[in-house]
Image (cartoon, rainbow, N blue to C red; front, side, top):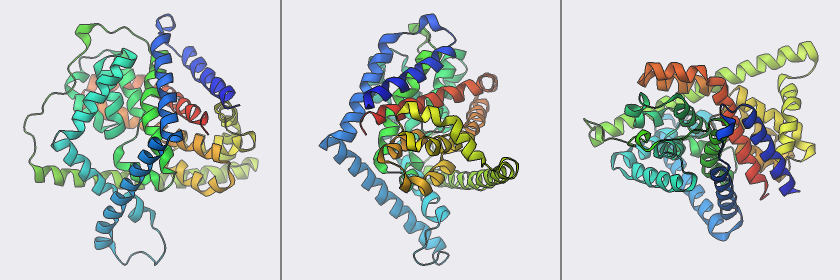
Length: 394
C-alpha cells in the first residue's frame, strides 16, 4: 500500500504543479526523476539503515546538548522565574536559539559553513543540471533560513530573471533555519526533522522544475558568493549573532501570541455560527490531500487540520497543536505530518520573503510580491512531496 500512496501523492503534486506551470512544454522529466530517486535513497538510508539511524541519533544528541547549553545561559539570567518541573516554552525552547545563532555565526565567520554549502550545491547541480545559483540557494536555505539566505546573494539579485527568482524563493520558503531546528526537535521526533531538512532541498527543486521550467545559458550562471568588504571582527560578529538570535526568538514568540489568539477567536466565531471549529472545517477540506499522501483514513481529518493550520498560521502553531493530539495518531501519521510541518510554507512567509528581497533590491521585491500566492502553492507542494516520500518507509 505504501507504493500506491507514493504514486497517488506524486500524481497529486505533479498534477497540481502541471496545472499551475508557466511553461508546460519545457518540463524536463529526466532531472525530476533523478531527484525523486535521490530522495528515496536518502530517506531509506536515514530511516532504515544502521548508519542512517546512528547519524540521526548523533545529530539529535548534538542539538540536545546545544539546547541544554543554551538553557544554561537562560537559567543564569532568568533563573527562578520557572516553577519546579514546569517547562516554559519561551525560556526553554525559544531563547536557546540565541546560542545556536552564535554558533552559526562562528561557522560563517571562519568560512566553514559557506564551504560546506558551496560544495553540496555543486554536487547537487551535477544531479539536476540546474544553475549553480539555484542549487546554492536550495542548500544554503536549509542552513540559513528564508530571509538570511538572500543576504549572501544580494549582488546577484538585480541580475536574475523573474523565472530564476521564483525558483530561488521557492527553495527559501520550503526550507527552515538551522537556528530553530533545536526548537523543532522539542516538539517533533528529531529523526523526522533531520530527514525533512534533507528531502525538502530536492522537493523544492522538483516542484520548481514542474511549475517554473526554463533553460539556463552558461553566461547567465552568475558567480555564487563574493567576499564582503569590511568583514566584522570576531567579537563584533558574536555580538551581532546574539542580537540576531534574540530577534528570531522574540519574533517567533510574538507570532505565536498573535496567531494562537487569532485562531482561538476564529474558532469561537465558527463554533457560535456553525457548531464546528475553524480547524475542524479545515481538516475536512485538507483530508483528501492527507489521504493521497498516505495518512491512514482514521487520521485524515486530524492530519488535514494540522496541515491547514500550518499554512494559515505557521509551523510553530501547528507543531504545538500537533503535539497535543499526536498520542492518538498512528506512527505513520505522525511521521508524514511531522515532515510536512518542517518548512516555512505559510501565508506569513510570503511577506517575510517579499520584504527580505525588497530590502536588498526594490524592483525584485515587487516581482516576488506579484507571484506570492504561487510561491505558497509551490512550497506547499514541496512539503506534500517530502511527506509522501517519507510515507514510503513508514
